[in-house]
Amino acid sequence: MSITITAFEKSPDGGKGLARDTRVRWALEEVGQPYEVRLLSFAALKEPAHLAIHPFGQIPTFEQGGLALFETGAIVFHIATHYVGLLPADADARARAVSWIFAALNTVEPPILDLSLSVILEKDKPWSQERLPLVQDRVRVRLMQLVAHLGAAEWLDVDFSAADLMMVSVLLRLRPSGLLDEFPTLAAYVARGEARPAYQRAFAAQLAING
Amino acid sequence: MSITITAFEKSPDGGKGLARDTRVRWALEEVGQPYEVRLLSFAALKEPAHLAIHPFGQIPTFEQGGLALFETGAIVFHIATHYVGLLPADADARARAVSWIFAALNTVEPPILDLSLSVILEKDKPWSQERLPLVQDRVRVRLMQLVAHLGAAEWLDVDFSAADLMMVSVLLRLRPSGLLDEFPTLAAYVARGEARPAYQRAFAAQLAING
View 1 (tube, each protein chain N blue to C red):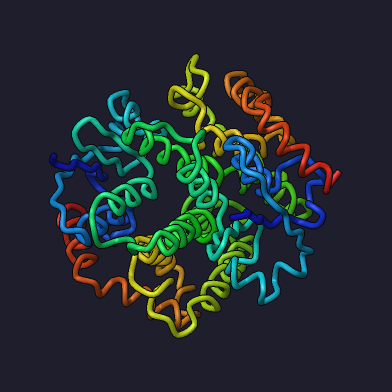
View 2: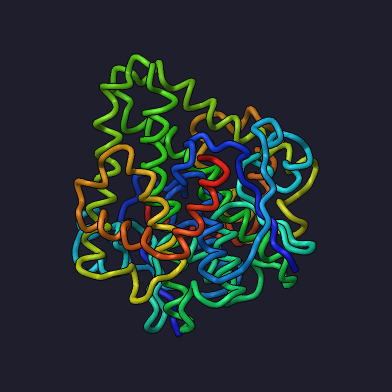
């Protein structure tokens, strides 16, 4: 059954690959599954047809036959459990990879998202400059903990998995801030992710629309 | 094999049940699995022994035999896939429930967490009062979308599942703010969750330590 995902008609990042459809494209490329893309305007995100699939009016979504999913984490996990290439075979290693998927989205990404909101949405607020160091330090705490875990390892837990796909995607959001460059271990980790042919194909596919 | 989770020796909320071990306790009560609790001081969270299990130095963790997991979402999902009672049997319904688990943690909780941080950690900052309405409005956007999805339904998708456990737990964090009371649909939804005997047992167990 063919797979259809949704993406922005025009991504706010102008093709940097930071919109969340890139994560799903990357997952589908890793497992070698072709997919169609339905492009949506910002207005279309808030229309009943889309809200029926995504109650929070965001992208991406994932449709295959009668199944419609939302939330990048759930979509990537679904792809990883239905096709080979993104999760280890061993049950315990698989459960650990799920821990890392949630860690990327629920522990590492929230302060990074707060930093993005501070820089973009709160840029002109009177508190913007004074509050920024506090928000950056919250991010640094998580990055230091991640460095301590990674050490000299190539990936989070032996082989590349959906957990690395998600963590690298989350860390990529930091590039415009310069914070990533404070942590060479993480800059190298992110570069390893970006060097994967599947990521390259996913990035090129979104750039063809947004570039 | 016996299950051991970790929790705060003394929860910062003084027994309101908002620390994340309550979510795991609730899941274990729903599936009828007994568990042991290892209590940790704030200092112990940052010690190598704990960081080996939880790289971000938080609670809860989950240990069973040789398996050690972290991240509440991953732990609840693990419990829900290994024991009966927290996920529907149908594969598509199960994938939708996973969408909602991620939605609770990655779309609804981040603005709520930001609100908590604003009220607690940034209380004495000069921007605190001026920024608060902006943070509250970000939460309201998500709550309105959730109300639109729930409508007159009892749970997110037919029967109570791990998705409701997570969403109710996330919404409970809003109670001190008064925001929950602006949305009677959600206040009633949260009350239905709290009324479940499994939640009552989980709440009582954490209160016995923190109260």
